[in-house]
Length: 75
Image 1 (cartoon, rainbow, N blue to C red):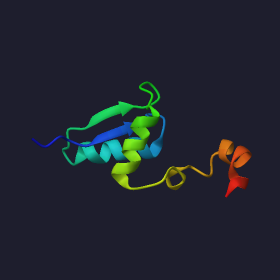
Image 2: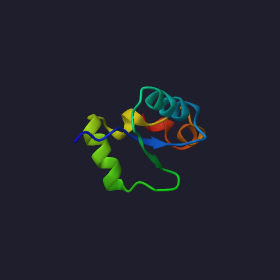
Image 3: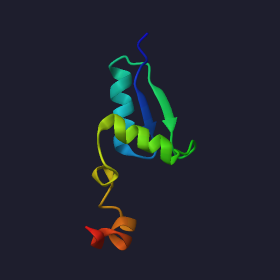
Image 4: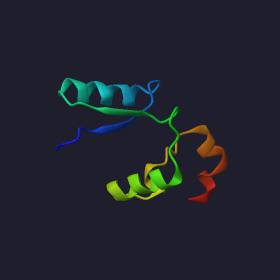
């Protein structure tokens, strides 16, 4: 049986809200995981990265202040 898409959602994020609206408009039954309320474990994150075949650095938001202050010189 087909399971609908799962979205790791931040209601305060415009892009997350837009993605959820798009999926709903397309008629999908969406499983919503509010990741600020339901924390992801490192194992959860590893599984997701394996599914999308990306490395952590490839999904890092490099325009965030914390990245610029602490990590930007590492690259």
